[in-house]
Amino acid sequence: MAGQVATDQAERLAELIRESRCTVALTGAGISVPSGIPDFRSPGEGLWEKVDPMKVAHIDAFRRDTARFWSFYRPRLHSLGGVEPNDAHRALAELERRNLLEAVVTQNIDMLHHKAGSKRVIEVHGSIKSGTCQDCGAEFTLEEIDELFDDEGVAICARCAGHVKPDVVLFGELLPAEAIAEAEALAARAELMLCIGTSLEVFPVAGLPSITIGSGGGLAIITKGPTPFDTNARVRMVGDVVADLEAVLGAL
Ligand code: ZN
Image 1 (cartoon, helix red, strand yellow):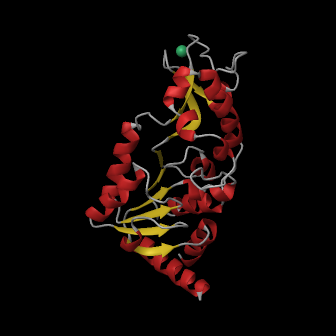
Image 2 (tube, protein in one colour):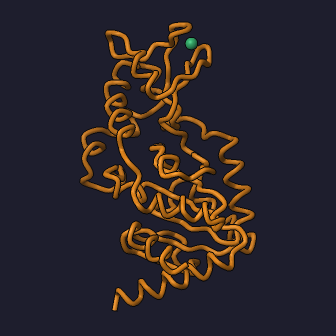
Image 3 (cartoon, helix red, strand yellow):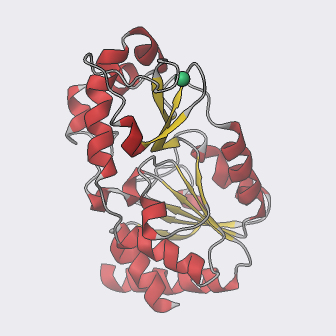
């Protein structure tokens, strides 16, 4: 009885959340799939099928052929900027409002946790909400960047005419040190880590559950497909992230 198992797991997770003095959510692409954003590592999912993200969304591509980088990335910024959060994002915002969730650590760059109302969001791969001039450091919002494109389709700094790069971590770039340090500190403090919509295979997110386990905390995993931490999870849910999180909220 799959439905009964899911209900039992939701009630068990609600109990763990009530008992935990510090719960941290860790989210990946799977939480944004119900909002219509494909997980580029799932085969057969639109946008990323036609291009190799390792090549086109690489810092070397941005530096070498900025116009080509933007020809791919500008429509992506546009489409991501218009996406709305779903009830899984809203469930996490609601947990935070009820003081049952300390923070959300996310791999996603789509701003959907903010849009759903979450206050403390640590974006370990950056975000599309802004861009920075690579020469003078001037910052521009997503809307402002749209006004900066020249005839060749390159975003040019309004102050110094340098190249503006979106504040997302491209392949080949270092991860933002401050965000990583904050995520690691939260993972160490967490009595419960809720891993949602992530296969827990990509650094730095892949390293965080080990930190929590090493500090005596527990894991709950809500995601489709296997993860390396499945045998460590106190609760393991494999259904739809929206339905699963709504069931947990309903049991609280
Ligand atoms: Zn500049």
